[in-house]
Length: 64
Image (cartoon, rainbow, N blue to C red):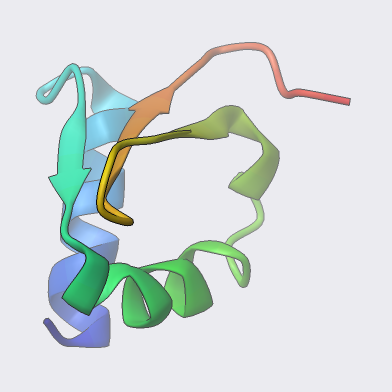
């Protein structure tokens, strides 16, 4: 996964084109590095799965 591809996925989550996105343990650190640098970072929620995988969702209201 590269930075451009990750941003495209995050934009698709934000637009509602994707309801959720599954990130494997192997891609997690790179994905998170891009995510935390976004202005809308607090709108994304990661739900941890068994084995270190994460499902990300976008919410209209930012978390506190």
